[in-house]
Amino acid sequence: MITNQPLVSINIPVFKCEKYILRCLESVKNQTYKNLEIILVNDCTPDQSIEIAENFIVLNQELNIKIIHHPTNKGLSITRNSGIDASSGDYIYMLDSDDFIPENCIELLINLAVETDSDVAIGQTMCFDSKKNEEKLIFPILTDEKTILGVAIFESFVKGKWPVIAPNKLYKRSFIKENAIRFVKDLFSQDELWTFHWAQKAHKIAFTKETTYVYYLHGESIIFNRTKVNFENYLSILGHFSDQYESTKNKFLKTLMKEKIIKFKEMVLIIQWKTIKEKEYLHQNIFRMQRMPKLSLRDYLSNRFSRDIKKKNFFQNIPAYLSAKLFIWRFER
Image (cartoon, rainbow, N blue to C red):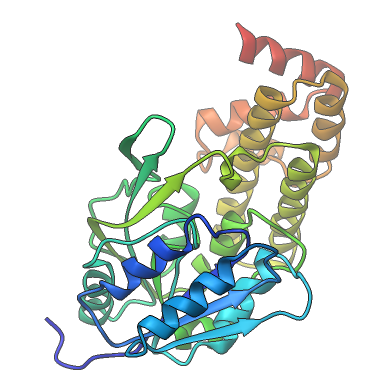
């Protein structure tokens, strides 16, 4: 148990969440750790979410809550940045308005962060599926290490050892500020890109396998948004990965970035075919991806990349029309 009580800023974006915002706020109110600053960022929500939040504030005046109002709708990335900029706490925690947190969430994470002097403390995420009325572990922590240091942080990110979602992490505010880590304007579903950026900068991260977040899966969840707009967004994220790869001088980091790019290409193609199933669009995207970083002959002759990565890269970079045909065959067989 820590003796000092660092202030924790909890950032909650508000947009079309009138069905869920009260439950979210109640879960923050019920935290066992009390030194909290609650920041609601209103991204011009058209529903009753803000009215519900304002009424909650009137009924709970002992809580430290402030609302930031955007003059126009700016999207989730700018909304998250507004929350970061408005935060005065020693730590920042991001919570989406349709989700909620167990009552010991912040206490667990702040104790872990302070005890280990970590830049980021990460907890386990539980998913509640509202259609099936069941709970299950989602985005699991796959490492048994309590802490990871230095370049091993980015390596563990690339290897998928812990969840990349921006929420359910306690970030040291000074770490975010000093490294100017921000969400990129006009991109959505950019958890991968956000984590790609900060994982290169962190000195230490820490884990608890206790549940500190409940992801509420419902029909309006972002995870169900699978249109061409989403896939163009993913390609933009790949573009940011590629730009970072080109500008990085560290050879070990470049190797890891190349692996991440190959894995992300594969993920995007699988999701695209699974949801849209347009052969020409698949062919176009494979062609576009072939202009991005890929393995060289030297990479194939080295032991820096696994056989699986080499295989993925090969199928991604044969002639695009053939790659698309083989991809469909591999996926549908």
